[in-house]
Structure formats: C-alpha cells, structure tokens
Length: 299
Image (cartoon, rainbow, N blue to C red):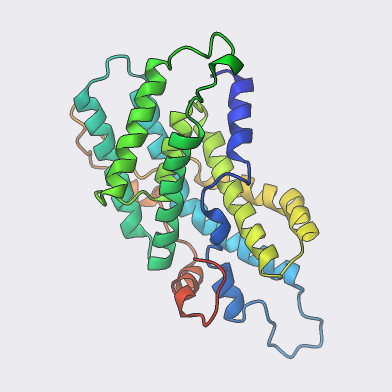
C-alpha cells in the first residue's frame, strides 16, 4: 500500500462518526468522578487543582494501563492477519490456523481483563469493528461512479480478508470467541491493508485518549475547548511516551511459535515483555461502574 492510500485509510479510521460503540464508553471515567476523585477533600491553604488537572491525571494513568494491556494484542493480531494475507498459497487449513490463533489471543485478553464492565465494553466495540469492515468498508455497487480500475471484482487478498472477518464475526456471534476490541482492531487494520503496525497501534491509542476526553466533556468535567487543548498539547506526548514503551510488547503468540508446526516455544522472558495491568485503582473503579445509582455510560 502506498503512503497516500495508507494516510487516507488512517483518516477514515480516525473519523469520530464511525459506528464503533465508543461513544457510550467512558473507560471507568464516570465511576472515577462519581467516587469523588475529582474532588479535593484535603483542607490545605493552597487552592485545590482544577478539573483540568484531574482529567489529565486520569488520562495519564488510564492510557498507560491501556497501552500495556492492549497494544501487545493489537500487534499480534495485526501480524497474524498480515502474514496470512501475504501468503500466496492459501488453503482452508491455513485459514483455520489463523482463526485458532486469533481465538487464543481473544481468550488471553478475556482472562487478563479483570472486571466484567471492561470486558463487556471491549466486546461490544470489537464486534462493532468487524461489522464496520463488512458493511462500511466493503466496495459499494456504484460502478458508474468508480474508476475503471476499481470497478472490477475485488482482489484475492481483499476477498480473503473479507472472508476472514466474516468467519471471525460468525464465531463471535456464535459465542465461540469473545471479539475483544484490541484483537478486532488489529484484524481490521491488517484487513484494510495498513502495512505499518506502529501506525495502527498509535491510532488505536490516540482514539482511546480522544474517547476519554469526549466522555469527560459529556460528564461536564471539562469543556469542548479544553478537550481540544488537551488533545493538542497533552495527548500527543502521552501517546508518544506510551508508544515508545509498549509498541514492541507482545503476547508471544507470534514470536514464540515454531514457524513449521505452529507450536508454542518456551520463552523465559515472555512474562517480562508481555501485556500487563498497571493501574489497580482504575480496575477497581471500573468494576464498580454498574453500582452507580444513575449513569450515562455503559462502562
């Protein structure tokens, strides 16, 4: 994929109007506010921090934990699908192996996600991404409005990607796998032909931060102008910092497999370079989301 086309794909994926379900998720922010963490109860002579500072504190801790826990799955899912689509000799057994590896990743993310609220939100947004690929990114039946080179049938790689996404979505609907957000995001970006997995990870982390700020605006903790200020001046260094720390982390479901048999190989350092939860307080507050008397978000 050339750089211009790849940049256009990134612009499409960054559209806030995409029906991905993120609009109803606050990633624990609503519970964080309800439990009083935006209120300074200390009787100090200095003025308390304003809500902008509290928002940045939450954004920093939440984004760091999400980067450590999700980016390894994005990397592995993207790599698995990309390698399959690059293979010139595709068969049914190869497709089954890809689905099995994606199911293993999905199951690992399920057991590593510590509370039911986060699991629920992740699965809702994940299957929305698979549906988006099928219904939103498939080639339209507008042959009169497409260039001659694009009005023909889809390429073999595009057909295989569409079949893979449909089969994965069927497994999710049948509850044979969970369809968590990071895995489905990796599948989506690889199926769209995005060659740079780092760009996929960077955009995924940016969208997570933007979703948090969008939730903060609707919770009336900051205003829309303040949210844009944070996106420009605060989010970028945060995302770049987390990317530098986490972009190479992997679950070892890709690098620790024997290339001929597909069996897992022993790796003593796997536990030190894999996904992790780094913010226990955030997990506890997210788990208490459903206990709120009134709420406007699903997570």
